[in-house]
Every structure is written in C-alpha cells, then in structure tokens.
Length: 379
Image: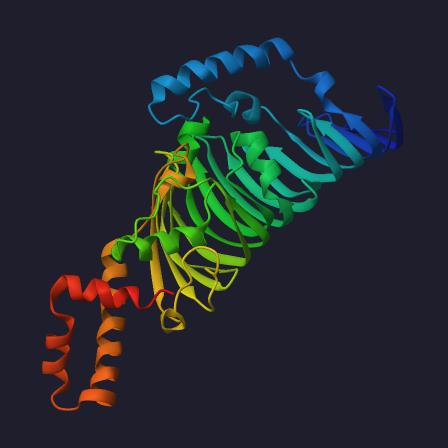
C-alpha cells in the first residue's frame, strides 16, 4: 500500500538466511526516512561482518595500541559519515542473536537516527548469564562524536566478561551495576580518556584470584613481629560477598571512597582510584577482623578483633595480584603498639599499681620490648 509521499508495507513478512521476520515498514519519499518494525527468531549476524576488514582493523588496532602509549586502540570505531547519513527509525526484537561469537538472548532495540543524531531508546538483552538494559545518544554532527550512555546490568558473570574482553581472570562473581556516563571521540583510546559520569556496583559470589587477603593481613602482623614468614606466598584466592560501592569517573579516572564487602571473618572497606588511560590502580584496603580466621596461619589473639588492618594495592592491570598488594606495615606497627600499651596498662593496674604512664615506659623498654609484647598477641 502507498501514496505519493509514502510507501507502506503492512503486514511485512520476509526471511533472512532462514530467519523469519514479521512486522511492517514504511518509506517517506519526500524525506527518505525509513521506518521498520520487525520481530523474528534466531539470527546470526557474524555472516554479515566484513571478515577481511575486521582482520585489517585488528592489525591496525595492534599497531595503534603500541603507538598510543596507553594500550588502548586509536583506530576509529564510530563512523561519523555513516551516522550522519542515517535517516530511520527501527524497532527489532529477536529470540536470539549471534554477534562476534557471543549469543545474545532475547535481544531487542528501538532507535532513531536523523541529522547526525542517533537516539537509542532501548537495547535489552540476556548475556553472560545476566541481563543488560541500555539507552543512550550519539551526536555525530561535529568532528568529535559525543556519546551519552545509561545502563543497568543485572547479575552478569564478570569472570566470563574479563576473560573474553581483557584476557584476565583476576575477578569473578555476579555483577550488577548502574551507569550514567558520557564520553567523546571515535576511538576506544579517545573514549576511555574522555570518560565521565557516575556508577554504582554490587557483586555477589565474588572471588579475587591470585592472592589470599587473610594471608596478606597475617603477613603484615608477622612482619612487624619479626616472626619470619616467607614473603613468596603460594597464589590462592579471596572469596567475598555483598561487595558494593559508588564511583565517580573523571577523564577516565575512576575514584571511589566507599567500597565495602564481607570476607570470611573480615569486613572490607576500601578507597582509591583506577586509572583507565594508564591501566593502573591505587587502592587502600582496610580489613577489620570480625573473628579469629588465622587458625592455620598465625592465629591472632581476639584483642585484635575490631581493628582495621590495611593492605595497599598498586600497580598496572597486568601486575600479578600477589605482587600488587602488600601490607602497610607502618600502620600495623602503630595499631599493634597501641594494643601493647593497653595490655601493659592492664597489667600495671592489676598487679603493680602506681603511676600507669611511668610503669608503661618501664615495662616496654624500647623497641625490643615492644616486639616481645606484640608476640603475646599471637598464639
């Protein structure tokens, strides 16, 4: 059906490489605007990707990565001229889609594009055992594209994401997040360096691979008491639960001061920065001992329960976790010395009497005396 200004196809039924699609379509002869509403079954998009160009782009990306100095590709992935030429509105819902080897469950999108502005009203899918909902906008009218993105992520398998996208198995767990971010540029390098906005995350069933945080805390205590622990620890893992935090992004630097999580017998509070352009992080992790968790390692006296013991983590993304995180022994020493003074004060009050401060000075007897009393906190 049609008229002098518009062609309409309603109902529309077609088959694309064995995938049946039904819906309707319209074309405005005056403006050239295309309207398309379709529903279908399973669609494999990989067969339509330009494989030779993809390989070429991969090689270009590798070359540009080394020249960028930050490790992020500098080849353009947002085609400005193509976006400026779009004049359409599309609604598409499928049962399943295969894209770049990934299977997307129940993918659906609604978008419109005109005069260099692309509005993504919705992009919903099931992936990595979770759900993703995205909306956003790309403004391609200037020489540098600006992008706004809002996303809700629910219970995706973070370990699968990191393994496939960054070849990293550092973290695993069920990740949920809300993001409201903006960026600029056409390359991954530019978009990372212009990343701004807010985000909050929650993670369940989490595991940090390559380091046992309980062991690291114990190592810090052992270090200040000179009990001679072997610094070359065997790689282990740190399970954690109910991790959450709020993050601010400024030009690719992610800052956070309220990260919390529950570990086995410890509570974690953390703050620091992740520098995405430099692919580095600098975090202070504060572990509060809730109960005695070191039965097999160094068995801490319950007088240390409730104290926050710090671990400092700093390095590049490819730094081995066991080398990235180290106890802040200066703070350990201060905390443990305070406990020593409390213990001496208790002994003075119970057994000796007299001036407490004078007796403390007498009893500690310098650094060697302090170390000896610290050992009393360890069974």
